[in-house]
Image (cartoon, rainbow, N blue to C red; front, top):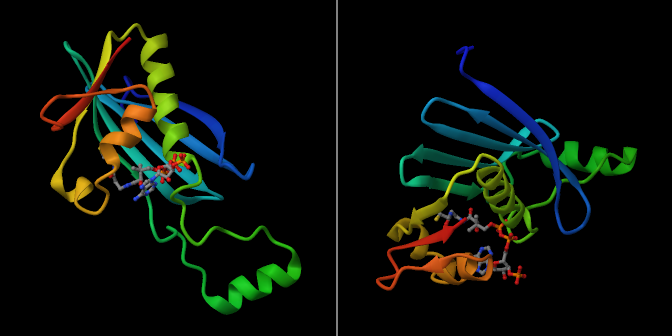
Length: 151
Ligand SMILES: CC(C)(COP(=O)(O)OP(=O)(O)OC[C@H]1O[C@@H](n2cnc3c(N)ncnc32)[C@H](O)[C@@H]1OP(=O)(O)O)[C@@H](O)C(=O)NCCC(=O)NCCS
C-alpha cells in the first residue's frame, strides 16, 4: 500500500433502508470510491483533486446488479431468509448518496469547488442527467457540457 494512501470506510443506505459499504481511497491525485453490497461492487466514482478543485471523472451505479446470483441460489436464499439483492442498483438513491458524500468530503477538506463533464456515453441513454445534477445543487454550464458547484 502506498504510504500516502488513506482509506475511509462508511455506510450508506438506499431508499429502502438497505445498508451498503462505501470505501473511499485517497491517492496523491484524487479519490477513488467503491460502493459494495455484501462484498459485491455495485458502484464507483473517481475524482481528481487539482488546483481548480475537485473533478468528478466518473460516477457510476451498476445496472444490472453487479453480483449476478444464479437463480437457484437466489431461490435458496429466499427460502433460507437471506437478504434479497436488488435487480438493479439504480434509482435507489445510491448515486445521490455517493454524490452527497463527495460534496461533504470536499467541504471538510477545504476544497473550493467541484466540477465534471457530461459525455455522450452518459447523456445519450440518460438525457435527464444534467437535471439530475441540477436537482442535487449543481449549476449546469450554459453549453450543458458540464456541471459545477462552488463550495
Ligand atoms: C446517474 C447515476 C449515477 C444516478 O444514480 P442512481 O443511484 O440511479 O440515482 P438516484 O437513485 O440517486 O436518483 C435517481 C433519480 O434520477 C431520476 N432518473 C431519471 N433518469 C434516470 C436514469 N436513466 N437512471 C437513474 N435515475 C434516473 C429518477 O427518477 C430519480 O429521481 P427521484 O430521486 O426524483 O425519484 C446512474 O444512473 C448511473 O450510474 N448512470 C450511468 C453513468 C452516468 O451517467 N454517470 C454520471 C456521469 S457524469
